[in-house]
Image (cartoon, rainbow, N blue to C red):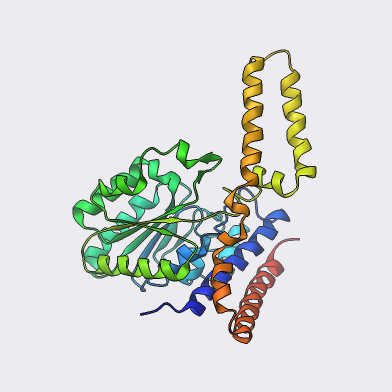
Length: 342
């Protein structure tokens, strides 16, 4: 069976446009606090979620918006939640990180690694209440260093819990590169716990759909959990407004803010030794230069562009689909903003 690229592209585009609209509201000051976008993860999420059935469950991380939308959660309810409205999905108490939809058996958490225990709990309940159903845990590579996630994988392997563990690896843990904070090989670590591990690039939604489908079928046959190690790029960094990316995009505006503080620090009589200050300055400069070559700036890593290129053979259908989804997101915005206080 081949994937329906049109349906998968529609899921991805809806999530991307919704998050871009959310970003605009954040920049306008209508959404408070940090905002963690999942732009760049869409192929991974769509490739997995499109296989789920009504009784399947999802345990999500702090980038749960795309999965919630693709699972069918009302976008108006989600956006209201982000704006802190009592009409929101969680009555304005969850923000964008702590979401819960009983109807969709979906829950997200800002606690790194918490998706493991939540998914294991969902899966244990499924064994008793909904045989044949599964749970999916979505998390980043930083969560692979959290004990509770690894303990959940061990438990899932021992009890043959129907869990699909999906690691969305962007190579970064906030501002720290994963290769200096994670020892060994992630896949080998998981296999050592008795969980089969599959490795793939997360930009190709068709390939993701195929591999995820095989893994989910195995889990439904009660053969135990599976781990998917997928690679992706977060175009906005760890959170919206990520400083290194702002510097690269607009160096003339952003660098003076950084340079002023660094210069003041270097000229202070008190504080760290000059050698330590120079080392700190060197680290900042290296981080900025590294970001100039960062894959987050490479459009070829965009899963939507990758899929769209395949669909361009039918321009009329593509335009009709894109116009329809754009209109849908605009209607969501208009509905919610009319309610928002001025």
